[in-house]
Length: 168
Ligand code: A2P
Image (cartoon, rainbow, N blue to C red; front, side, top):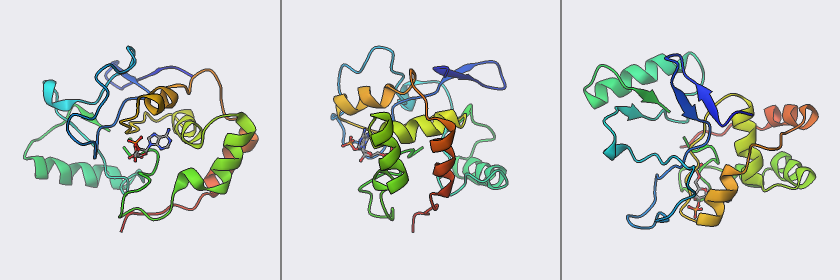
């Protein structure tokens, strides 16, 4: 599995980044792993934005993007980013905890990985980049350790049975 995906412009995007949503100011580790690309948009002369996790169906994407462009009062963005890959456990508006789902937990046990690693690997194995948020250095490193192993087909298909939940 490549550490990068190639965008339609030919540019490369890391398959795993670092989300910062809901991180209190000053709590991100000051020395993140060196190969980590952090989603710190404010220092970039780019116009990135993120797609709500309720708008992942292919038909919903252009509509959601138009609405976001209107909200931002701009006519384009450079990046439109695939957030909350861990299902934002602990967030009040999120029902359930995908990291505790029996399919995820049993796959993690079989593969000797954490539920978070299995979830992230499933998403990048689907071909999407991920931005897991964590302020804990150990987790940030573990969340990047998703390249030198894979979810075998028989386990992979079981993930499709996980019922989707939408934020309220
Ligand atoms: P923390 O910042 O204390 O590590 P998402 O990226 O889907 O929004 O999820 C972010 C949430 O998941 C945060 O509450 C974060 O908590 C937690 N989290 C991040 N990495 C892991 C991990 N490896 N195991 C368990 N929880 C994690």
